[in-house]
Length: 88
Image 1 (tube, rainbow, N blue to C red):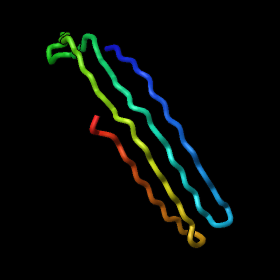
Image 2: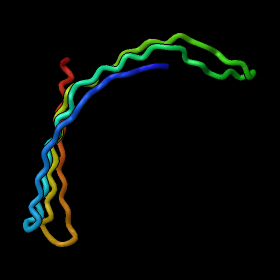
Image 3: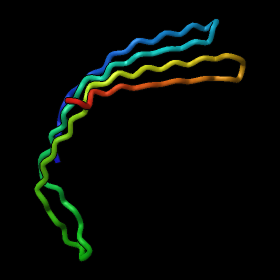
Image 4: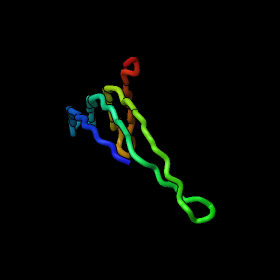
């Protein structure tokens, strides 16, 4: 099987050591994968089965936000959220 695509991501992060706050925001670009080729599978009798395969998968753009707080020694509160543009 053969496939190829490209995508990119960009992000920002912040850390304040005295207060124990960490935050990040990351953008992921959309990506589309097209797969084309021959899928070869073994059979029970030792032969092989070749099947032509074509497929496409679309992954939408998304944004992820993370926040981590250290309210006391030995404690970590972590929050995360992600939005994906599945309307495409």
